[in-house]
Length: 332
Ligand code: NAD
Ligand code: DAU
Image (cartoon, rainbow, N blue to C red; front, side, top):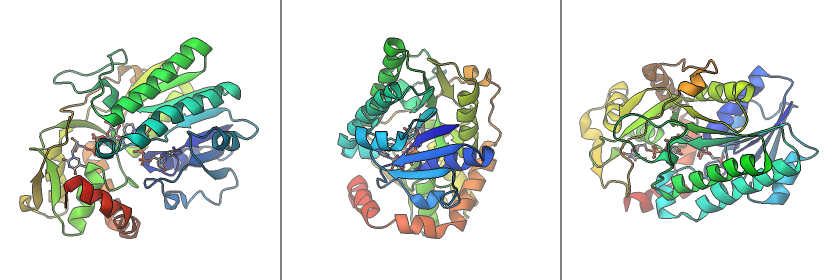
């Protein structure tokens, strides 16, 4: 088996490469990644010397780069590559359209040309928009509210169209929020943990009452593995755990784990168009035999410990380009 993983130097892509290579020592894995600010080859140190692993630096929106990564052919493509941070999409949407929409189109065209047997699009619950009560299922209409979620929704529509029109063997996943080791410290959990480890306050948007559903890295890797093995072509699978938390619940848990008090909270201006709540129904995926294994508390404690033990990893990141972005985001 030879698989192409795009965006494999990012948070979840790198976790998936390490997970799948440990399980299938005979699989060949090609990682195509542009190495944007979010891509970090240090995430892959433990597989980089493996003879079955190859890294290609390139852009999913560039067909020559994609052809170079596919080489003589691959059996499967899993597209993790994307611009992923909602706040960055509000400040500068351009790269989101180029990578998330045009990049997905370029990969779909390549999958068609090279007769790939399975193409998995890693997408998000954000395409459904916000929901006050209940949960979204796979048939819920798309109502994206940020340039990020709109670009992911555009990509998902293209995937569906390529299945319907060309019979391309596509599967789409919609996942809730990921958390775990190696997440870039611009997202809520790693930002708050690393700020507190540096003695800085944590910026809570609005009153922190928005809700998200959370999945630990390893549980997401296992969900994608189940879909690769048992998912039906042309189908869509929601990946959710039922672990719903308000931002304030998360903040207080992290403060307590790190021995900090609520004076470390700084209430800041709310995110424009901020989605109130995401929640998805993952019954269909559970029908494939998958269920989350990490409890919410266990996953979050493991994550906090990872950041405590890997200061060198995030301290290097929290400088340079990161500081410029942080200044733009918070105006200071
Ligand atoms: P990330 O931001 O940590 O990493 C993205 C990776 O993609 C980086 O390595 C980056 O260099 C690479 N990349 C960006 N543009 C590229 C391009 N044009 N060509 C090639 N590579 C490029 O991402 P993540 O948070 O691990 O998310 C991975 C995927 O999962 C994304 O598609 C995202 O939309 C989706 N998703 C994320 C979450 C979440 O909570 N983070 C939840 C649901 C779905
Ligand atoms: O739901 C899946 C999505 O989850 C993914 O598709 C996205 O790629 C991923 O970034 C994530 O989007 P969110 O906007 O939910 O994640 P983020 O970590 O940016 O924010 C989580 C919540 O915390 C959200 O309600 C905003 C709030 N927040 C975030 C930051 C960065 C704060 O209050 N303060 C902050 O500094």
